[in-house]
Image (tube, rainbow over all chains, first blue to last red; front, top):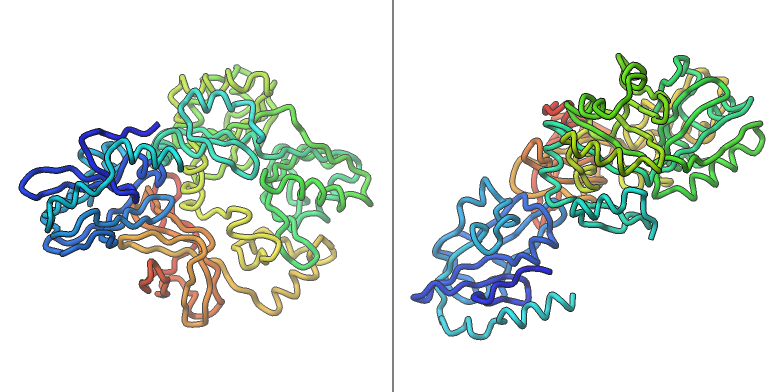
Length: 129
Length: 362
């Protein structure tokens, strides 16, 4: 059974969102998602300064098995990407909720996060899969 | 679902299991990339007990195999010597690829793929009908491939004195029955090592002995990236019954001489050779992104397709095998285009071999 931390919010497309304060959110893919994909080999991340809209494909997580789109969980601007992943994509596998984060964004409407799934709802989704 | 005798050992080692053509087999034990590096740098092991072992014996065993196989077992004169060959159908397609071991002219052993087992057994029996031979599946063994630069010495920690003596100085592509083990210097990784047939009753003990010797258990995921780096075909993906061996980098396995030797598919192959076929090449893509099976390849001479593609853990970029039209556009060093995630990207043609003995051969 996959780990689903209680302090995070989730999209049904397997992204997690952490509230950092001041309208800033950190985004990654869940432990369940990395487990389905297998060993990561490339992360194609957005550029800092990119504007993204909820549901827009804004990054690609490519594993030995498949390439998978990552969707923006919120509308806003990309303010930082995880440069470590360039040389160490395996961090997404080994620490998906920590060092394997993908990008940080400044949300246009910080309240939008309330519309995402909580841990219990997301755990329910992956259980049904 | 079918399971091998080592199934419980895989579960104990934390394997993630998948359905591989009806067999519940390990895809990885955590990280297939770490397993891959384990084989390239040290020693790894694979449960290949799902593969089918067939013993061919009888007065006409040699005549039968000379008719069954596109390669010629008459080349085998040293006891234990192995030969790689395709079995070709009447229309010049590949029924399966296999390894045949020679013991004497009335006694051979074949190892064929698991995914095609039923079809292969039927084919072997059908072709055997006019010959005085006995074709018998051998079910007494489990099979473990131990591969990597330290595979031989780590395996030897489990060998008896007699077994050590039997394999001392054994050249590549030989097999020997030494007491209860059949030990062969074959593999599917591009590394040195053994494929070992071990009596089923001893298989778990042998596997655990290898674990204790520091051999890393590896799943089908690493097996695929290793064989692809080594430029080795996978049946069902790089060739099948609809593909000519000449278009699948298997031309070297067809013995055209002596001309008098008739063999299954010979006529069709001669026609294909005269008319020309597509050819199998290697592809490398050094940018971000992974070449995948099924993608279209555009060349100066027309379109082809990727038959196997992956990320190469050893090289750090993507590699693939592709079947493309023969011509100047298929020459080594040519640039072709592949559509990757809605974008056409430039990809370089290389010989279909990427890594040998831990090192890039590009």
